[in-house]
Image (cartoon, rainbow, N blue to C red):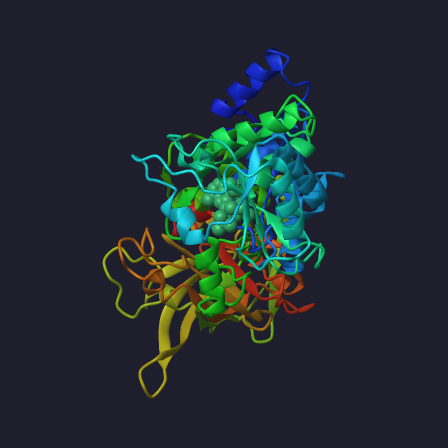
Length: 562
Ligand code: ATP
Ligand code: MG
């Protein structure tokens, strides 16, 4: 993987470099402008890392702006969660936190200025008439019969719209550009509409609200944004963005240099859905356990899952930004998380599917310590003591009565090493009335303890992990997997809900190394041989953490765990 410190150039950096070299801007200013109508998802992480990352690299600033111009569907809960998520990703914005709704007075005033200058008019056609007159890609639109209203007439109507004299939809303010434009977005787009709705920030102050395409360029200009980076679907809106800001600059409403809109390809990730609408369906339909369900591609979900901010930043750097749509495989993101977790997560021992191992020749009541490294590549992290006794928990799959070819773990007559402990020889097992194995028996070799002189004279092929039964901490562990079973959920005409992976959450009681009882919420570990796990930040109690699996090991047996 590329060193995350080496910044790969991309077309946006090239634009910024050229702008700075030409003296167009003194410093750059970007923004991340979420609409507070949902929780942030992995796609937003790409945009966040891009905008905040550019500001950081070019010693500029990045604003966090809540694009809350739509009075419906916006809530404080979402504002709070967005702030948390961006901070969690490691970014800060100082005093540069803004709400677009605070600009309503300016937006309204700018609309008046446009009307006075003959750049906007009040249309009183019905929505159907407007649609019918809009034209098509190949056919020009038709001018509205209200297009030639005088500025005075328009201003009067606009004021009365604001005063609440008309119901929703009775009139609409439109930019006066060109109904025959080849770009449909320039065919006199709507800029202000009547909406008798309460707004989460401005309450009932307004009953006219700006359209997004009108509001957004103004927000950028008022904040002196230099590079307004958005996703590709806004490309056709750029001519209107520029038209509007040029008019407003001529009218003395906004400062120059004007911001410029730059589009990049949004993140498309396999095995998840990244549309707010679909995420809401998953939550409201109770297909997941809330917005922070560790299987959801929300940032609150990722955090509970044990994914790391550094992993997201690496991922963003690795996938880069382009102008063309592409799909990124989920394994790329998982790989970034795994790489970061591999470097940072201490190793611990966990038995996920426990069966008893009884060491028949171990002195009754005795116990002792074995020592396990906290990180195999970081000797400076030291070793920790792990208690050993005559009854251990081992994985059920580490014992078979009749071994298949190439099986080196426990079976009657075979020797294995208990990792960081002793070599044992299996003698048999106990079964219940139904034939289920309830305990495995063995004898140990007292002179084979790892780290003691002569221990390596024992040559065995199998090496299994264990925890002392008397000391183990029995905990709830959630084995999370991908939420969808297919790469492209809902592709074609399929209902995406039908593609949910029925095995995406498996809850077990595992036997964990005693020290894990003290894990703090959000502490992350590698459970040797099993993957990376985090102490759940929501359900854990002091002294009783529960663990979530973030990702499995690349190599579930051997290699990855070493
Ligand atoms: P919707 O359009 O459904 O409201 P949205 O995902 O576009 O949802 P916003 O809150 O408008 O939500 O997004 C904030 C910012 O995040 C925007 O600048 C948007 O371009 C960016 N963004 C959203 N989804 C992605 C994605 N999948 N990849 C990259 N950037 C994204
Ligand atoms: Mg959007």
